[in-house]
Length: 350
Image 1 (cartoon, one colour):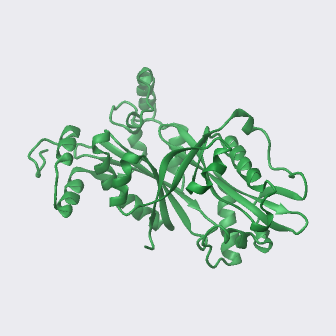
Image 2 (spheres, rainbow, N blue to C red; image 1 turned 90 degrees about the vertical axis):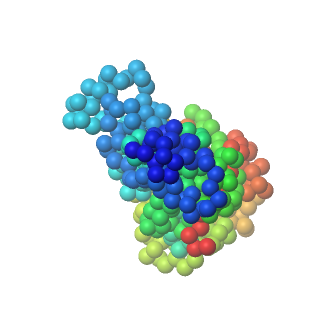
């Protein structure tokens, strides 16, 4: 086909040239992106093993030496390759949506993923993590992002998210700001060690105990504790119990609390969610770390963070990430966290 905007033949070379052209009319520029790209949800057939134009090739997870074996697997599967376990899980996960972006010749030009995290804050709303927003080349990443973001954000809102998070490189920041994202926090990452895979939830020396969250924590001050961290809103017992069930039933998320055994009150909490980064890297993302103001200075912050690192390691993660303010970065640096990216946020109610 021929591009009606520039009269060049369609394809990746055309996209790079056409998308780099300056366009003072923003409406026309957005129309140009819609013309160049098609966005749709990822499907099993996108893993067709014999084709060079498939998801595995695109995300860099398809070793050349395995092509013959992959072709045989494709034939045995009736014309469709079998995705690796990570992708097979994501395709079936109700909390995750994967999208692909292609040109008119159906050549992959970009990908994007939404991973929804059920929360116990903001009236038990959800947060969308935007991941794997990748382009075939760095030159067209801004245009790929501009084409993908409306679909990703719209779907996240449909899935009950009140905001979306995007950890970006410095070079990507302006593109995200132009699409309604705000710079919020630092993004920090720590590599997990083998020793962190050992250990489990246990009684902390003294009067404290760490354990998984329970529905009975509604009566032990859990909601009030989270109110010291952020906006909680009105959370009824029914909402709380349903959300605890949502989190507890997931195989890739957990919420841990610290209970004061003398007062039977929850005085500390944190949660961790496993996020899939292409090609085959899973990262534990730590959220909602808070210690009751009256119980600080007793090492409870260290206890909950170390517990989250252990849980992430047990999930099979090789690293952990989190978002925090500049003033809190020194605390997390004690656990090996280093600033890596910029934490951006998109709010649906603003």
